Amino acid sequence: MFLKCESLQRMGAFKFRGAFNTIAQIPAETRRRGVVAFSSGNHAQAVALVARMHGVPAVIVMPSTAPPAKLDATRGYGAEVVFYDRAGEDRDAMALRLARERGLTLIPPFDHPDIVAGQGTAALELFEETGPLDALLVPCGGGGLLSGSAIAAQVMAPTCRVIGVEPEAGDDGNRSFASGRLERVEHADTIADGARTPSLGPLTFAVIRRHVSAMTVASDAELIAAMRFVWERMKLIVEPTGVLGLAALMAGRVHLRGRRVGVILSGGNVDLTRVREWMAG
Image (cartoon, rainbow, N blue to C red):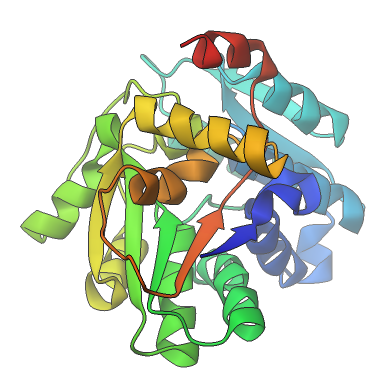
């Protein structure tokens, strides 16, 4: 088993890849006016950091319940944070309004070709280092990392089975994969805050249907068990969303004994205030 440790990426998650690829391609004159994004945490930090690297302003629309560590980091990278209420406000509409009012460029969290292409470089690097794999397990929220990884696999290892993994309480992608149409799960109650996205996007869903072999889930208890293993045995700090693929493998949700398997650990921006509660059992 080969772990791709995106928890060690700039700003602590794979999201840096898509944000950099997208912002770097905006014409300089347009980019100078700034960017806006909406995110529960990792995309927020990625856009904030990349904007700072390019010397442009960033406005991030975040839920009022965002993990403090991710909120502090986003502000630490120099972004202006605008809060919204998950229960009563539309973050997409708020970001679009800010874009129109201030002349900002919207950087979507997942459903954009440049985002997908950037995220897919995580799997591309893994295949370059390991050679062909029999299977690749990838966390899935909005599907940017999963769809980008699936495209990379088609080029680098066409026989590799790409398996997307969601939190059990937020299984909209699994439902969509099974039904053939976009399904939604609103306000998923899971510790995997990076995968609470209510649905895949039209673009990511189309790529996933075409190139992903299977979808599965992991429960919060399974995420905690995988986190404990990675923290204690591998000395890596990984967030709940980050271990979705590993948790599914450890819990027997997929059976790949004797195979060469890649697992993307998608991020390490964990809310340390919750760790004692999670690990208490």
